[in-house]
Image 1 (cartoon, one colour):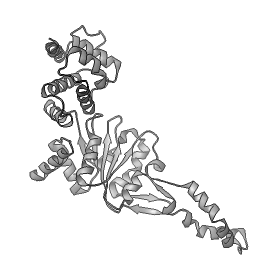
Image 2 (image 1 turned 60 degrees about the vertical axis):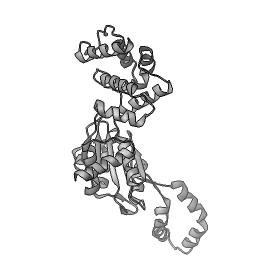
Image 3 (image 1 turned 120 degrees about the vertical axis):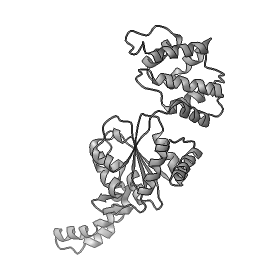
Image 4 (image 1 turned 45 degrees about the vertical axis):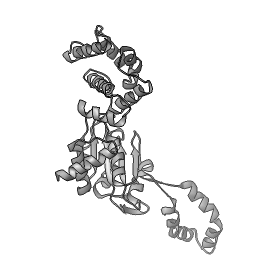
Length: 325
């Protein structure tokens, strides 16, 4: 078992994804048990990237459904191509006239049309959306249902049949079962509480911000051009910023973006000017930027800033002051 988990971690690493033992174990069990995975955690910690990496190492196509408020079946599952149906109706007008020519009553004509309605409500007029594509694919796929917490509770309830039985009901066609059971990964940024019914159908995984050592490995893997000393400073700054009371903590993806930006700027070290000029790569709220700059320069914190006397922040001031000397 340990060897198999290690093999999962090594395979993910080939796709530049550094997985913890917990991540590797859950993905291994998801494959073996045929269960969806619900990955929760802060935005930008690698939940979506996990699905992409898993698709690559398993050699399966990735089908992605991006969730948002107001998402419904017509955008997620299927819809009928009404324009195509109307075009076929026009093209087959003569054939329909022949079919109805000897109908003696309106009721008889309606019955004959009803017998032919399956022609217009068949798979040739069905426009498959991501969920139906995943179920009807001729090869196994990885289905990513991204940011499920942004969708409405009604849509979440709609997913239950797919997550438990890997099938869906289309009124005009009946029940459609998966040709090949997909590997399903749902992600959530915890913007709202998900239902117990959905959680019960999934293996649960929480992905948090990485520790300093892991984030250092990620930066060195994703941005190998960055010098080791500068990479260590980048990670130390990011880890320190996450200890502050910010509106939005810098994510792992933003750490990587910052490291790449420093490479583009040919930076050798994190001096004061470089830090101040590039902080917006990490921080996306002006109040967070100003708070970080005050901490960087060792200035007095704003009276409204909580945690201004936090020993960790005083330590950050000392470290950043050392870099600037």
